[in-house]
Image 1 (cartoon, rainbow, N blue to C red):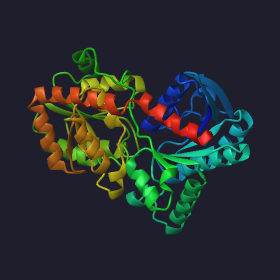
Image 2 (image 1 turned 90 degrees about the vertical axis):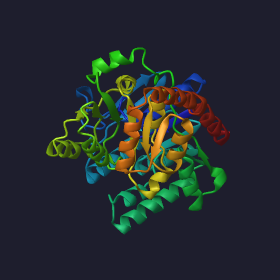
Image 3 (image 1 turned 90 degrees about the horizontal axis):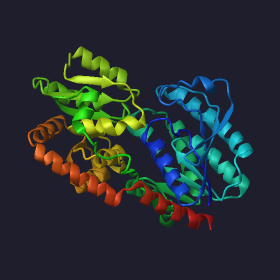
Image 4 (image 1 turned 60 degrees about the horizontal axis):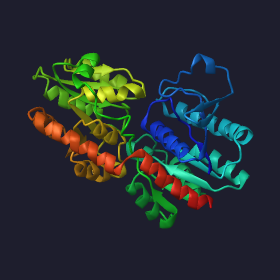
Length: 407
């Protein structure tokens, strides 16, 4: 098949969605398919373009056999709702123009959300080429805005929901990343046989236990202490203020340290709070390249996978859960619903309620006291994700869905 994938964010930008799209596209190339990606110039999460991209309207490159067409967009940091919407709208226009002018006519067009605006461009391109359109849903827009209180204007929310349902109904297939998302769409009137679930997964060859864990600890500056790691976006969804509450409760133990790696809209506030509370057991690290992520997991004794205590998040599965488990690191998962069920079934995680500070604290103390249990959980978690969430296997299943749609 000739597959066209349109997405606002793509590698080398960091993040779970970018990893999913890149690794899935690689697997499709290995299976003999042709993949073209229409995306923007890399700038996430800082909003800073590389010097060579400034002032350019278009660039084409090859990445692991994938043809990548990059177009201009309004680059902005990953904060500020209005500026982010402006960025999404700018890419909607340039992606439509670049995709129409530069991309060869595919057999199928896939749009990955967020955002809806790039999905709308993909829908128009598919309509123009008379090719089937597939809508991949990685977040439930606009429900997530409403749940988190980011957007309260009922008219705007209503307009976004109308656009959401319009695109679901016009798609030949809708691909969701969780079964909870699929059930939500069905409940809202989308035909069950139109919606397929292809979960996130992991490349177990890339995310693997370190050859020398102690060497990784020394390189990362965490040797000699029980290290609790959070690595990923520091956003409104992740309840990281509650993790600082846990750190405050454990500050009296000089052997425990909390390390936060990454960036996001909440990071400055977290740093200010840690300074204000004089939390000497907390360290913040700038975002790292994907190549460094396995070593950071390898340096940790326990990794955290937290989410806010919000009803909608019972349908979410944080993709970092699979990455941590693949690295043979035990997890404390403060999640509910589908993610909690998977974490519990893995054998590699202690599951507690979202934002439950005493429960998170007690789980960390329990794991700190039992090194043998940590090792056993690590091995169980890796075997679990290899068996059920290998990215290549999931990509093959995805391609089978696309082949049926493309005929």
